[in-house]
Length: 375
Ligand SMILES: O=C(O)C(=O)C[C@]1(C(=O)O)C=C[C@@H](O)C=C1
Image (cartoon, rainbow, N blue to C red; front, side):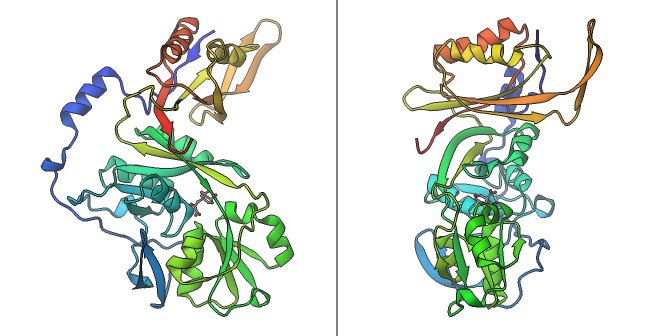
């Protein structure tokens, strides 16, 4: 009965910490830089024309040529740059006006948002010091887990430092003057389209997937499409100068997305706020093994808020020799656990210590001790 080793990403050993603290770049030893924006060909042809749209700069409204809006960042094309602005920079996946940007602004109302083309780019933007933090969706109350980000947490050395819960009120947006009867297609992120199924079935027009809701709104606006609508937020309507034809079109009125806030350095665990801790581990095969591992939390009244399992991509199958049944091949899984306790609390330390003693090896990956921003 042993807790199997998982790549210890997200967790830095004592040695790595001291190395990191000695070698991490400080603002003063980094050359002043500017972020270079790069536009990549997206799933729908790039935006043409310079339509004027109302956009929103953290509360200040102004008008801007759409072609001059910052384009999402791809790490491949970055000249590594930092400016000396004191504003915290938050990377997110998507275009301006997407729900991920809403989540970033909810957590850090005065932040400068850094749109990125892919989830991985948002991770890398923090690793390359182009942003201080990343805000990424991890779970939606209607659509479930965003598995890509579970996988990326393992591949990147960032720490969870917070959580944002954002009510996602989906709206049908179209150009001013366009009526609902004129629509021949609707564009949005697949998740947004899926959770608005009842409304969209009644509308009865084809749906087209795009990378994010902000992009859908921008595409409709900048191409002057009078036969298309975007499913996106009210803020996206303001940013791109669109009209709101219908509000709250999601099937479940409470449609909430949970976002994680990631940073290069972990926060120091405290006990003055509700904290959550996230870990990942694998287990040997055997009856009740997961039940036993989870008992270390139950025994100490530690509430588990989420369990997610993902296949071990590098070693998907495990061969087990059993004297009764012979050799069997099982899928091997990673278990991601979120529990409601801070690592500053003895019960959390004891629970993880219990895992260590019970399973002989202390080799789970620890992603972070975060507090939920809107608990
Ligand atoms: O498209 C967006 O606006 C996003 O921020 C992405 C995303 C997602 O990845 O699930 C985030 C929240 C919404 O539930 C829908 C889509």
